[in-house]
Length: 147
Image 1: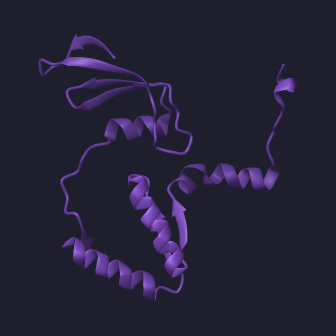
Image 2: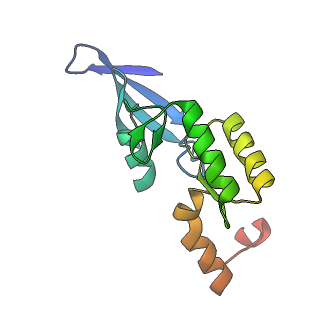
């Protein structure tokens, strides 16, 4: 990590080289991040989605749980989620992009238990590409053919 020019708050701009972007499943690992204080202010070599994720990623001050838009306790949220999933005819567990591996493991177990489909946010990012490959195929080659 190298140090560069001071920022407006009297601190320094830190540069993090070879950072990994975990926004999607590509996990690009050549991103250069410029950090001032505790905020990323520039993301070099990141795609449009990665740049938006790095520059707008902030800890939000919000309740741990909401039920129909109103704050609720975690216990109330778990109880409501359990009721929704067990009563659903076609349950779906979606998202998980900002959750820990342990939480994802629990979500998969719940999906198995209630017979749910499980989808991640990668279907939004990469879904059109997958559909194109299914519809028209893709160009491939061996490393020998590339030479």
